[in-house]
Amino acid sequence: MSSLVAYEDSGSEDESSASVQTGSCEPSQDVVLYSNSKVTPSAQGLYPDPDWTLLEHHGNISERSSSSLHLHPHPHFDQRMTYCSSRAAQYKHFGDTAAPLSLPATQEKMAPLHSLPHMPQSFGDGLNQAKRHHSVPSGIRPYVPKRQRLATSVETCDPKLSAEQVPGNRAGESQVLLDVSARVKPYLTQKPDAAGIPRRLLMRLGGHQGPVNTVQWCPVPHLSHLLLSASMDRTFKVWDGAESGRCLRVYTCHSGAVRDACWTPCGRHLLTGSFDNTTVITDVETGQQKVKFDNQFKVMCAVLHPSSPDVFLCGGHSSVVKAWDSRSSKMVKTYKAGIQQTLDILFLRGGLDFITTSDCVSRDSADRTLIAWDYQTAAKLSNQIYHERYTCPSLALHPLEDSFVAQTNGNYMAAFSSQQPYRMNKRRRYEGHKVEGYAVQCGFSQDGTILASGSATGCAHFYDYHNARALHTLRAHSQPCLCVSQHPVLPATAATCDWAGEIKVWH
Image (tube, rainbow, N blue to C red; front, side):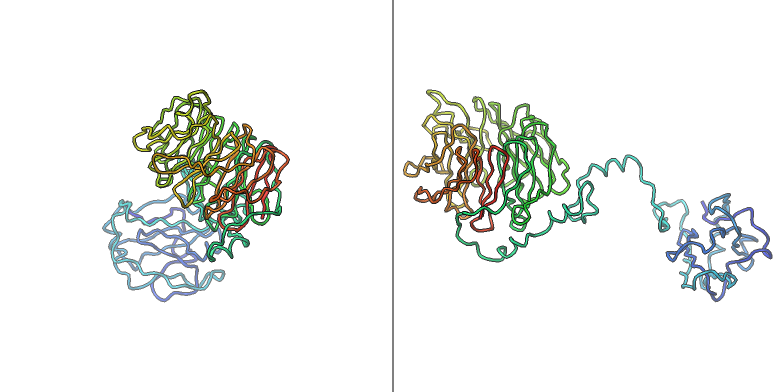
């Protein structure tokens, strides 16, 4: 199809007020002609008078000297177009490109002249869509199909976008989630100091309407001011735990109590498990669900694989532990233990094996309290690890040594080797706190020298890991303290949470 256009309701050449001629250009509005011979206004603006339109091409197209384009008042630019039928005449008409096109100086309102591009030596096939150049005038938004708009609306937003470009977020929230805290920044370039013990209250974080099961600092150093909390009020939140103490984001993607939550290693996503039988991976910045899994049982714990963060394990009110792959949204492995429920899961170093703990207590429960599994084959490596009749609500891995500790309902923590046959160290027993049936968690400092634990009495206890000596008892809460999380960058800083829904930061 030829791309030359002409309009039928124009006057004669003598009555035309403007024409396109060869020769020197006078001051006029820019007319940009592309290789597909469309006539469009330039980026400088539209026509100076909205009633001027490009009308008619007169004369014999085989004679270049008699061809002209006329401007006449017309309300619309795109009415009653006719096309030249001869492609050979089109080539002959635009064959010579040595002389630029111009408009006469009769248009006093028009802008000063800008140089016009020369016409190409030849035109390609007008039907070849690959060679067409589409130009959209400024201020006009191109049409987007409905299916494409719907697909775009559910895509995960690029975290590099500015705060105004991220849908569903206020500008202030997005900016805070991307910034580095002024309190953390000086410690990023320094060699980590020895772990210390917090003794003074820094801030209180209120807002949860139910017990807070866990708190966890972001593992990325420059984002370590972000504090994650999961509560029985069906929400989990991200706080600024280093400076302002305000809640940066509230996530309400669960319909049941959120029992466990953790950061992904990149710090951009959150893994949560809930009593609504689901585990969800959520984008921290946008709050959108990246993927959701139905486990068909109430989830008590969820943990990421240390060397492959796209894979995670979850356990709960079931005798089966399930492994999911977030890339394919499929269950890749199952581990059948023949127990009532799984309380906690701990990957050992390298991710080749892991430990599960259950609530099974009976006369012969020594083979079911702690179980070591081979991750690849789903085989039991050992079930004769802990021989006392106490359940273990939580586990913690030492950051440097080949060992881990188990919190027990015997009101003490026991230390074990992370190498087979996973022997218990009978010389190290950390006692002085109370568990009394609560899901009290324990954790190490970044250098592994200090072991911290909550308590049913509301206190936070700090122990020397190597000699099992009690270092300090912090009277943190009036209700049972369920978790003590030590900061990975700031020295002598920790966050605690309690059964009443209160979170405190100490330093």
